[in-house]
Amino acid sequence: MYECIKTIIENEKIDGIVIGSNVYLMNYFSPIYNHVRQSKLPVTVPKFPLTYSNIDKFMFPASGQRFLVFGGGKLIDFTKICAQRDQVSLIVLLSSISNDGFSSSFSSLKPDEKSYNQSYKSKPPKAVYACLPLLNKYMPHRFWVSGLGELLSKLNVWEDLKIDKKVKEFDQTPFYKIEEFINKYTKRNENSLIELIKQLYSFSLLMKNDSSWCSRSEHEFEKLYADSQMSHGQLVLMGALVAMKIRCIYNFPDLYERILYYCQKLEINLELKQGFDTLIISNTYKRMKKLSSVRPERFGLWNLVDSTTVDWKMIIKEIIKEL
Image (cartoon, rainbow, N blue to C red; front, side, top):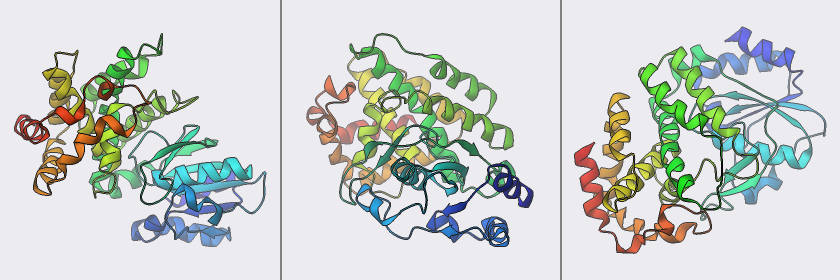
């Protein structure tokens, strides 16, 4: 760990470091803090909500400098926007693997704490690093589930892209590689972690002009439940299962059975069952009536199916049973 952070700071000529407030409190990352203190680099820990309305609360000190960002997806998205504004370069050190946006040229943030996430133009990092021994040993299991959920949810994006008449041709290679990953890696270890990062990185490269290549009808579900304790990746996978189940009922081409099989093979079906159970117990499944109105400008399944007409309680119970 010590050599890892030392190499990054020296090779990338880092001028300062930004650390996520949650990450900063985790004892197992202390080797990083210790080396940062020894290097006498300035350290910033944002302690305010990372929403777009708060970007003026964070300023990089000088343009042209290089900063190491150590944290999760929300911190990375926030600092990418600030980097675009302040004309600095970012080097990212992942503290978790939970989404596909860490190297894209767009950021997903809430305008304020009461709104849905929106996409904003931002500056992608110059390089992305991951300390695999640290991630494998210490990264909470929920982030492993989140990373897998983000990857599997792309199967729903794939189906939405196929029915969007505005999309003529697109590179389908990353989508085909999902099955290759699942057939080769089912357990968490350093090899599967680096391959998962590579898979998610390949999708981030598709987001050149906007996030529509990686975010469709499954993300509408995530936006409705972003205030829950569930991770982003778990929510978008739940959204993908919901969308695929509806495709199946309406006789659209679907990959519902395949996604169920993948969830069982990767042993993440229990977390998904618990997530859907929560919607039933809390009576929040009724929010799904709003799916068609969340983001109608982003074409997907909910432009073809009116979500207000669906018996969502029945649908969720069927998914729980089939998981």
